[in-house]
Image 1 (tube, rainbow, N blue to C red):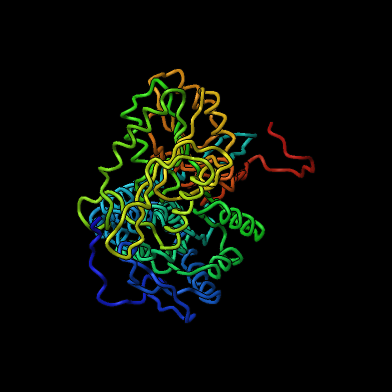
Image 2: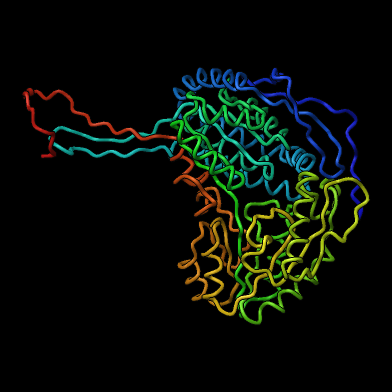
Length: 505
């Protein structure tokens, strides 16, 4: 398959972002940033030291004091302008995502669009931060609540959505009056710098938004720094658990979204064509590198053979190649090592007794990019590596079930609980499924049920550490803390000493 894309003329070194300007790295350590479609290094990214992170926190802390004093109208105005700049320059941002992540341009545009939705939600911050007021709770006494920002907060974001996931966090955090430090993935860091430029151009004051690149040293510095009040994270479950445990041990508020093994339950009465289209789209879109990808189809009864046949018919029509080549539908994986790891799951499934119906390793590509064709594996069972692990690649596993109850049990017994879907024409079965299933996000004939921005994103079980979901109403809650005021003004009748416990009377 053709995967032609232009190689970089030179390899440049990226910068951090401090006080609304690029800031050179000082640690002396860097990491390569690849173009996954060619396998070539296109940039180097600085890896921050603990001292550099500390300096960023100092800047953010000073800026946060001024920013929290700004009016809600000023903050929402910045968000409105930011939203307009994102919309006007979405094509540029999508191109950056394609170049460093590898996903095709249309998919990158979709990512940017979903990120913009979250900025639009944050534009309504004057309404979202309204408190409550109770008059005359006792004679001459009123009680009211307000929401206040935390101060300096940080986000640690993954490689698979380098634009959207930061926008899940940044809009609400800034609109609520916090200063934000973003540590993007070192694999595709340039989208974060582009967002920083747009925020500056939107009128965000110096120091309120910073970008610090880095590896584990920077992450640990964020988790341990006493000047950072809260940390948001999206990534794999082992790292999410580490982030949560380390951050909370250091007194921080933490929301850590982990991995997934999203099942799609297909009942015998489902529209098989619709289910096959959905399975192919949700399993292979973005080369399967989505935490909401469908990686397992649970086919009930005689739906299995029909679905396998329908999916198999669709696979040869997929166009795989470089993300910047028009017409391609799926790009490469993020690194050579990850591609080889994904290919290993195909081999292990075969060795453990599953049937490889379509083998993505058979497809040959004409350059050194990190490409892998799509795979379809039938007869997968719990206990096999391909079922138990989060593959995070273009591999769709099919598990057979005799009944709805057996399929439901498979889903509920899985350690992950991020997203799931049911495909059926039976409204009663769909309603029962949404009642029964132990998963945070559910699709009914919708394969990738990512909530709109005015709801919140989050899974259950090993897919989420912490009690607050991402963005939407729970995002505003996460980035603020409530304060309750009980007030009484001088009464002309005077006051008296009363050592009793206050009562409402």
